[in-house]
Length: 173
Figure (cartoon, rainbow, N blue to C red):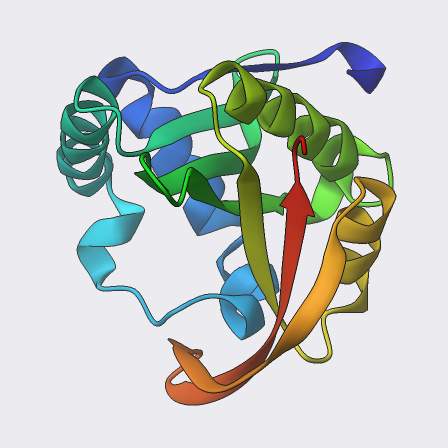
């Protein structure tokens, strides 16, 4: 990971650092994120979300990490909705702080999470981006994802249903 930034699993004790990062990056991330309640930007709100995340991780359904520059959260990445059996699939999601854009952090983190997905035995990882999110599409392309289509009115982002370009990475044949 470049520039002394580390990627590690999130813990409930990271709630204040995550809340601060979300608050600090609110305006930058808003065009790419759902509208969040005010509690999302508080340590208590993040503590509750991280407790839910831990339960999901303990069940093997979702996994959550953060990028740390010292004690400061400068990004998050997740592998969610993990399904085994005939599907062997998970969904990749991520963001990087405005101050740390263009340094390859999202690309390196996504590569590492795809390696983790292989360890889980997954066959495929999928991701979606807003149609005009060229930066995220570049990250996915650099990580070996291929475009698989357009999902109209897919996710309610920034207060309105928006189209998403869907991508996948086949992890092994």
